[in-house]
Length: 351
Image (cartoon, rainbow, N blue to C red; front, side, top):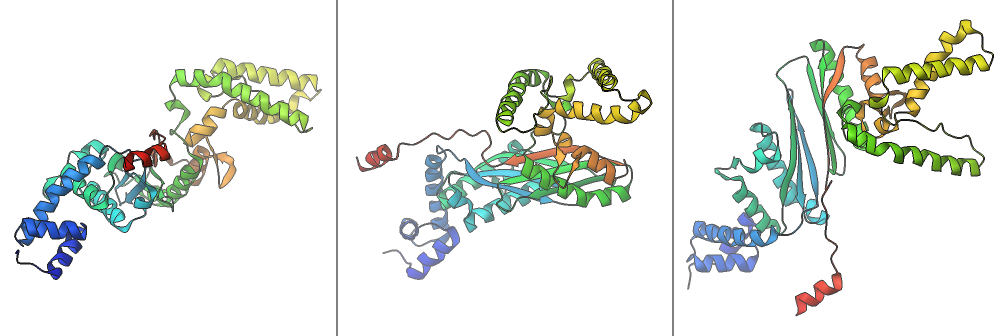
């Protein structure tokens, strides 16, 4: 009979979070040697983790850590939201985030190929999988860093930990950087809520813009049909959807058309200069719907919708700051989850 008792089983369970019967069997297999029992459970856990690793992990959390000169954001997935709320899982997330932050691991590959606690990260993660009982994946990560004291960094993690944002801004001086840092958190909150996909319209692939054009114009036409039915004012139907498409030639044509309209309305030519800028801004707004939806700097700022995010940062910094870095992660983006036939799954388990 192995030399161990209930207290040893309890201690092993508290140390490893393994099941009680697994702990008892581990102590039996190791003749009561505590360290050998942990090693046995590790080997057993690694085997169990391999099975769990085939399961799709589409739930989980976003983790954000912001320091003085760098910030990390990581998506760590689990199979279920229930596990994502588990304190053990949260502890694993905190450990991985601190590990990435301390070692400047700025993407998921760097994290997954690193060493943690003297072992390959893959082994560490497999042990967590065995302990928690679900597949876990470090899927995406990003980092913004700078040793320049005129560079401001901040971020925001939404209360449900499913959306996180990091922002970085180049500033003309240290004073502006310190002032802008707090404002970056407000803008990060905006980005968390409004879901931009990129920083500026200049980041769009021209083919993406072309592919989106007709559909978005038709959408406005459909909306106008409903507005007409309700007897409400119609929207201006755009010709374009992004500032990318508004060349100098097109802007000049729009300006000439505005002048023709003012002339037809009998507006005195001496006041045209006061009217044209506003009408031209409206034309640009009507023809940049894609930018306003998907590009952060071109979105209307939620705390002051009279300006875009880009105009807001320019205003609050007196033109001395420019947002240059933007990372937004939301749990499960782009993951396809296979629909399971529950009845078939139960039948399979009973077979």
